[in-house]
Length: 268
View (tube, rainbow, N blue to C red):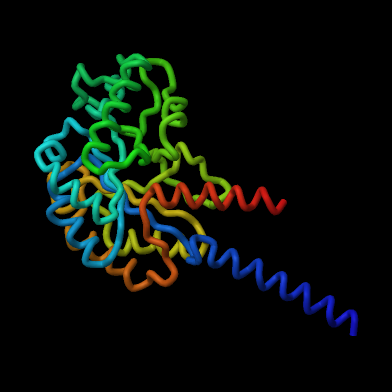
């Protein structure tokens, strides 16, 4: 009888651990974050109405200097009021210009010529601009072009001091205990088919990982682009499987990861 009880307890523990892994992400098998960069009109005109119709919340990384932001403050204010995150993407979107393929970077906004003080000032000023729109003090950050250097120096320390998390641009499958909160990877969407994107979601579901999508143009307005139809098919797949997928903002996922790790440390 004792042996049977011990076996029963062992099986119960194993079953609990398996279930905990399957429902790791806020009681879902995986987390998917939809992020959109550069404050494009198509985000307001096409993306947000679709997101709202499906009940999804996303993160929009905004640069205050961009006309798609400055000309439509009330629209971004409404988006934030409806639960979307307005993330910081610096004030002027500087990128390192002395690299192959970066000929489009303007000399005035060449991050390789920046000082740490300059990038810090521009990031913090963008926080003030965004707070004036959404009234919030907490938001996440996205490195412009994935660059983390100003001149020859890393400015990641500044990000850690002022934000709960940051998105990079390198893609990799991310287990919850392996994620670097200040360089969370993402999958850059540029012309892929709906099936390709959906396969990534299926992988995340089967492997209990975090999947972050990075969109720029959706139906145009940016060289990095995806069609409206492909974007819609992806979101419809997410909706059809939302019992197994946690679709939320970058900030919510970062907070969840931090709380999960704190709880894990407590029970060690």
